Image (tube, rainbow, N blue to C red; front, side, top):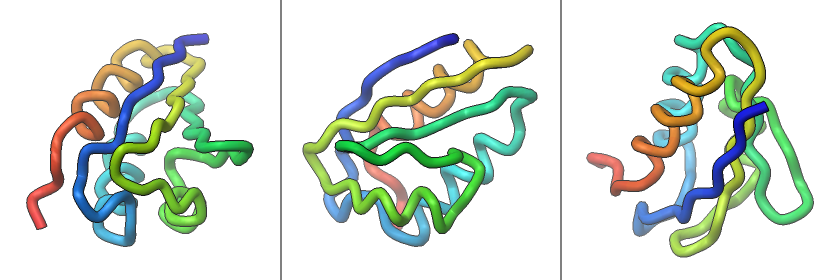
Length: 87
């Protein structure tokens, strides 16, 4: 299992548009990918699940992945979440 923690830098946190971008990116990888925030863990390929985390700017999200492309998936999501979204 690959695991990494990232701080949300998007000023408006993770809402609908960022959640859609995250799910779209996660869906490109052959891996089971989860996002965890506080005491909740969701499937990173689920827009509704991601939105339910209600992660705000400055808060941490833990990304975990297992499978053939786990390492690549985690790195891609870290890269995405480590910068503001173009909104």
